[in-house]
Image (cartoon, rainbow, N blue to C red):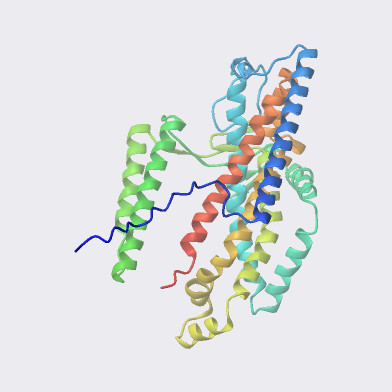
Length: 399
């Protein structure tokens, strides 16, 4: 081919400028957001300067060195070892563990009670349904603080003294001093015991996850009971043989009980109040979630010959969980934050021993409040994250 002498015109590359394809409205939105961030940063800077000036006037300085100082006060209840000679950091850990204990026990008790009452609310038995309705309408319309005070001052404190304690099957004793229950004792430290329990739980969770994946891929059921039993038996034998595991039973000796575990009146009242109050809201969430499932699902299950219990267990509740999980998470968040009411009855939670006593002794308000806020923020985000994982696991996957 012969060249015609014509060459392809060269197109000059145009420089790409930021925001070239943005509309005027989008540019205004970006400008407004940038202005808002600048104003926010300016306000934070002014607030920080104000804090520094006030601290300089009072000859105070920010820092967390006070956590290494000796606390010098006792704590009435602790699930981990504590002495008056321990540091404020130990006080923080003790308060955090007590708060986690209240939150965990309250969530478990409120969930079980709420599910039972929510299902009873839909019972075909008129008396059972109306009794559940009366419970819900009565309990949830009273303030939580009033519940705490009633259970502590009216119920727990009205129990007889230790020598006349209420005996339940020679295992649990109810008195106005404490509630005494059996306990497991071992020479292992609580850190080692928690590690063993966590390992067993992780192994069981892995087995259940693998079994569920196998069932989804092949459609064939798997038997997981045998390996789970072996894991639990092995962990129990390991703890029993290594740590000399034994059951300690409470027994009356003189004017008080020895052996077992003593649950303080404050702990018992707070757990019961949180469980009873939040269960009334959870019951309504359960009722609404069950009623959100179409009537045809019940009719189809009944046509297959399933009774009401199996219909609830196998058909209704698994579908209702998709609707229930998000609002149930909000109720759990409320329960965790409401546990700070423990200060009213003297239970040594994080707010009581750290924000209360430790702040009054050290005067480090900013550091202590920041640590406490961070704890509740992390707890709330952790519960929300677990809820999101569960929601993604339960969601319908369309093809």
